[in-house]
Image (cartoon, rainbow over all chains, first blue to last red; front, side, top):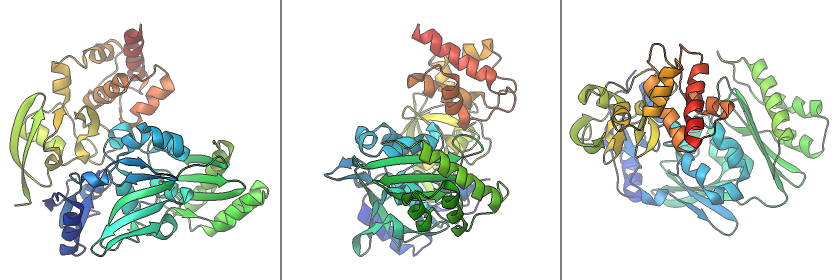
Length: 273
Length: 158
């Protein structure tokens, strides 16, 4: 199918983009890479009155290595993240996960900010933010604020953004005490996951974020504690009961729960520094 | 006015100016306005890869980009890749290995494979399979496509 009609706007600055968003009062959507939004529009799941194309906002592009964080502009594309040496060196979890995010042709357009703002429950990026304890810098009519990933994802395609645009993402630089794991199960390489998990381990504590399993990417605190206490694996898996697993044509909730356990097991097995 | 957009771009080396509806996909613009029907339209949601084209030297889904977003860009379709000889080796290898049957996926498959070969991709079959996982072929079972891509890489690296 084709997308319904909409106004195409192309602001030249972040301030102008925020003003346009305010002016349209919830009826406009920002267009980043468009790799999820355009299909949703073609399916007519999303029918914005206007698209605000962020392509010209240079201030949203770039990767900056700061003292203990890597700051990534919201419009930075997956392909740029994958090729960037600071990302490769300081965010090992990205190196594990990026090859699983769709395919080259999509990674050449898709952006980190776009994925976070959309908050698709099956997308990898929100889970990576949760595991890495990232902060999300957003810009709105009242200025800039920082949100922790834990406070950002509220539900299916629902975030804490309130008439705001994501400006940048701040990710703590990996330390020598940390190890990372990632695994996802898909029908075809590059597809959305039926179940997946991203893990950051710091000394003996864990942040494990699941995706593709429920209405949003999520951590299960009880499961993380069980990992820390080195409970036997079957006792760890019991805590997956806390997740309200998605039940759809691709996999019912029982299958998904089982797959989440398999993903967790494999991710833990493949932890890297 | 923001529902009809003026764009100027380069397509296969030629300057193009047009006024397009905001909702027009790039691949539909190429096919219907410029009669470049080599890029195919399959799923229209980025899954099948039949519309894969090159934008500023990078492979892109033609159905997941608006014509309006192509303003100022350099587009190369399969017609351009064939004309300038870039895809010649791959085309010959596809023919040699029977890497196509109905041909619907072939333009996208060639564009994807070219991206892989140009990026210095290895001749490892699993890696090739992973790379072309974004392109559906419903005829060949992929074996012969992988054979063809392998062939080109091995030939070029000698």
